[in-house]
Amino acid sequence: MYTNGYIFRYAAIMVIIAAAVLSTAAMLLKPFQEKNVAIDKMGGILASAKIPDVDASNAMSLFNKYVKEEIVINQDGDVVESYKEGKMEDGKAFKIDMKRELYKKSKGEPYELPLYVIEDGSQKLFIIPFRGIGLWGPIWGNMALNDDLNTIVGVTFDHKGETPGLGAEIVADFFTKQFIGKKIFNDKNEFMSIMVVKGGIEKLPKNQRIHGVDAITGGTITCNGVNDMIKDILESYLPYLQKNR
Image (spheres, rainbow, N blue to C red):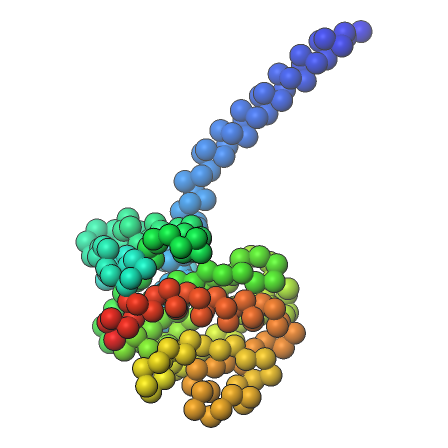
């Protein structure tokens, strides 16, 4: 018969061994997890610029092929760093934590944001990453602007847990393709953002439809989150856009 002391000591030893094994596994797996996160991030940036045939096996090589410059800007729209040499994933811009920087912004503190310049031989694009809140958690994405810093060439969106068939459809082509050719400034150079309109852009005046897309039926809260995310992030980049248009 085992004593209570023996049982407690045995249980404590097993807990310590299990914790050590789990801790070691987490440490060993962390580099692979970070690499997968980086590859997914690269893929989203490239997809917004309509770079074809991007997958997990080639995202890193294509990222280094097409991204010609990474820019870090501050809240005043000034360039803090321009990175053009070496592996692009090593640049400061790529390592910026958008969530942390946007939190600084919400507190009225100085912040820095990343901007990616892609050239594919025929065009020069500026990629703005997004981060916001949907119905059930974070949503994020990327927007590729033409070199006029006004016309949208492509967008990507993703989410952590939006409702399948409803808000989760922000990733679908029928939604993202609507953004192509839309403009974030009007003819008077006034910032308009992009409006995600419940019920369709026909509700907007004709001269504003170039700044809007149709919302997803049944995905109102997620679409509101996309709408707010786009406006908030573009406003954060607005000083840079206005200085460089």
